[in-house]
Image (cartoon, rainbow, N blue to C red; front, side, top):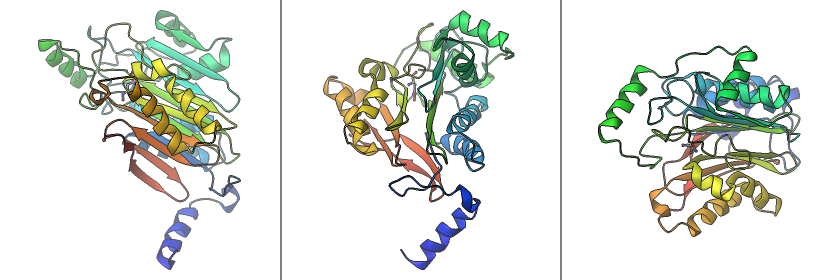
Length: 316
Ligand code: SD4
């Protein structure tokens, strides 16, 4: 490592009080946060602000996910998300902590921050998942305010789509990018969250992988965490994120585990080239992996050593 490199690392570390520079047994510095897609950069900043103050990974992933949910320019998550075929914005989200607690909401309408409702399900109810009208009722009872989530821009895109009403679930072309966020805090604990408005112009009532523990998100504090983006049906069929964590348990690196999970999907799907799925994983040791079917999937990483948007390796 040359002197310039050392100085750069020194500058990054100097943002942190020395006492927060914990390390995993493998020597990776803590904390670390990773998020899917370009909007993951802003999500990571919000998460990082919590992590550097020795906050928990759980608080960090929720704070990060809320950034994309509130941003109307992210047309795949929360406020401003593309609606379903009937013009309704319906949201899916889940969250999971280091003690295997988890909460989830699906087919939720009118609430800007489904990830926070999911956390309330986890913390305030004996259940894991609430959907539709029941999830909305619960959110209101918890003090969440209802609002119109359909922006003019998303409405116009839907009206344009209605002219042909052709459902083509080609995720990258639809520019449909869920946020999945995983963090390892300075105590070495993992948490994750995933939130989305789902596939653009989906059937009314359709729920994807993102709120399903094991499919769109999975965390095992002994091993690692994984989240997914892309054609949710494919992650559901293979319980994709659970597979990624299990591959890591069997000794795969985060990178190998993501690759294995994508290959498992592709193997059983003759026309897999038409679809996009991507997995992002963070091991308990602080190693990051990402893999997808086709090029175009990127993810943001933030730690004391790096702060960047990275391209996921791909099959094609
Ligand atoms: C879904 N997996 O609802 C989500 C969509 C997505 O990038 O991730 N798009 O199927």
